[in-house]
Image (cartoon, rainbow, N blue to C red; front, side, top):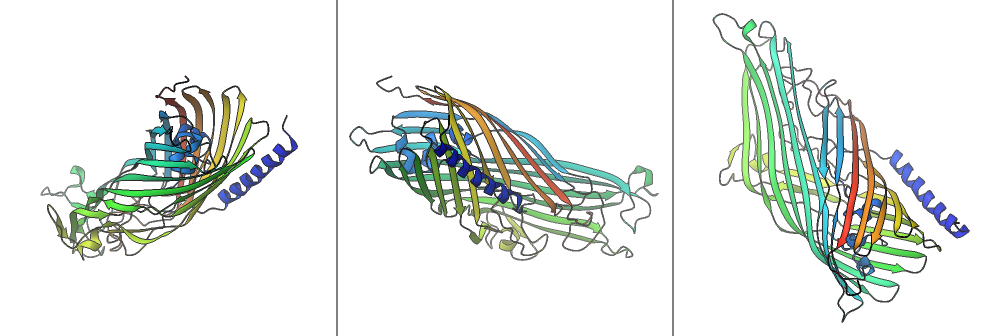
Length: 507
């Protein structure tokens, strides 16, 4: 039976949960490139606790969440934590035109974490942890086509056939490798430090092709096919290697534990990439009543563009409550990420360089460079764990995951450089069972994630094509509306395990 003290503590966590629920209802979605700080948890233990583990209980992921909790691992071990997969369903209604969505359903294999923990016999208060893991593994691919028949080219008698293609592929991965040190100053208080080398890899490809042409049934005599076309291609691949440091503190007594973790801004070591951007149209009448046609081509390509994958300063705090019975733990963690002002995400130069070219309307560095900024973000999560019997336990939790990108809207198409897909805030709910044994643990669970946004800007309109609207829109596309509805669902299945490969002497 739970005591009055336990009920009071549960009531505090419920109040915090209601606060988070109100935060969810009143939050505004963002439209930018997809990026979240709390998108993925590192290991199965932290995943089932929604990452609310800054005050402890993170297991082998302590090096990341709070290095001051590394001393909670009291045995030297080599451990592997692996998750199974997730099913992601992405739907952007009307994104490519009226009733023409940008949809995607895909399976993703979840990240793994490999750690080595050492407890030096001559320094019993010092614990050392080495780790390698994938922090972020985001991927999306959308491939859609459209066709219709109509009188699109007013100056050309009769109907034309119209075909259009939209293609998007984006992959972002962030790998960490590093070392952490945790030192117990007393039985209740510990400090910690960790340093990582981060390898960030970003690949992006966006293409829109449009064509209006006559077919065999309406080709005049003598045979001559009419063709108008428009095209926009943007692709880059780049990487950045950075140094990331964390510092934490941790205090614990019988009933409570408190933790704090400082994440310092990352420092660039090296990295670059290649950017290609092309825009063209041909045989386009800018005035429907005129017989004069226009054709245009702009393009640029550069290798060795400097990349800047910046990480902001953030402060995370957490508290855990341990009931007197020892069967239940209540956890809460919050983290504030500071903003990053405008900076060049991709920094092109004035010279095209080797294997490059410059046919841009202005300066090549303006045609190929990307500028971005990041909003300040506050995320929070609550969780609980209860021992059912023996080593069998049940865990569950909830966390927010707000999008941090703040689009820089300088310039008009095609000069401006933006990643053309949607962003939104995501919320995660999870639960599962865990069983511990001498050499590790097995965890089975599930996480459900949901995000949405309404009245968003269309990426392109391929269902109501117009020959020409203005210079800031690709010819042979339709007027842009703000009627896009975003729905994002992700079901993640945990079938993870932690296994200690190093056998201790007393085992």
